[in-house]
Length: 552
Image (cartoon, rainbow, N blue to C red; front, side):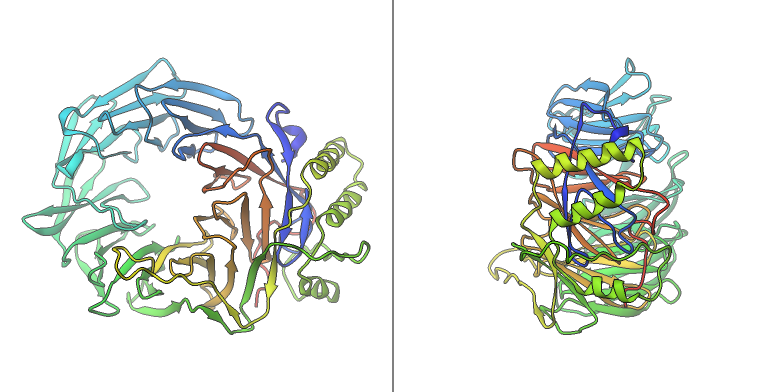
């Protein structure tokens, strides 16, 4: 996507890029797997409230909230398509699966308002009355709304087509940890699994979403069920206990217990759980600072990943964020030649990968000189935009360097006299190709750990200057976006790590990120604003950004 193709009234700036294994690049860069000459273009900042900003499932729209207003924009041009006004401040939004409707939950008022994108004159208001509202979500068909009342007394299923109402009793409140949830749908939308609590005992009910009839109902061997999650293939349901007891149970669709796993006893247990996209692996993060990988054949542990404070293995690449980059002499900058596929490193590329510091202005000049050989109008416009961006936004003084082992990571000592200690694996996620697993240990809050699932070993560690707030994988490639609450967004792929300064006059602190369905753009969310980062690549040169290469 070229900047010249974007609407000029909102696309107004580009940014400098700082790289770990490849150096600082302004407005565009070339590397072995980071892609053909690529650029990052940023939209202007738009107002936002409560970090409520979501792409539609089909990728056509982008919804954002500003207090009681819902703004629906075109995801490509960012032109406003629809503007809706709710009765009070919006606290939750969710798209229907077909992207035709959007739900706005007003928890304070116990209301849900549903809006149509194609027919803006149509709207729906659901009032839970004195029962109140604690949570709201769509059914997979996009024609039913499931509202959970306060104190989890019941779940009300509202039909938008027939206006009928169904009730599900005894839902269990599962609110411990980022991955804990008490309601989960299979990916094909056929079944719903619900955690229940009745007579001081935990149960799971499986319902058919087409008519909301009960299919299976069984009790679970848990003291205080903390969360449930379907495998992506919809064949296995994972159920895990609270942090007071390490126990995870695997059930089949008909309610049979397939396996039970317990790593240890008499200590804080499970903190986070994640399925691999292929359903072959189940990653279980615990309070002891380890991630245990279970296989789908025997449901036994095949390996465990520890998170030590010191990295001693020379095969592990440690990207360390530093504050200032040393000056370089102009003319001594070397870039690798573009490669059509991953393979053994050439002598030029090996020399390039050993360097860890680059000057952004020199990289910009190199990229512009390379682009000048292509005499097209679109690239001429991109070249001019890059020069303007370099003039307004000089290269950032923050960069990544490849640290030499041993490397000591910054650790956080938990407070012994407070509840919910900051220890254990607080977040983990598999890459879409099942090749990598990203984890964050709450006792090492500034680091993200990248594990190679094929070789079952630690591949890389990214240590930031600030605590990691959020990370999310590209929906189609092994590319990870990270934010730390500062003015940068960080991208990792098997080729290396880059940091991108969000340009702008004010202080844009990135608190969360959200990928577009295609992966061509990334929404960056701050407390009061959001902007879009567009990843632009020149087709036909080198490999695609984020393609897996030689990372041994």
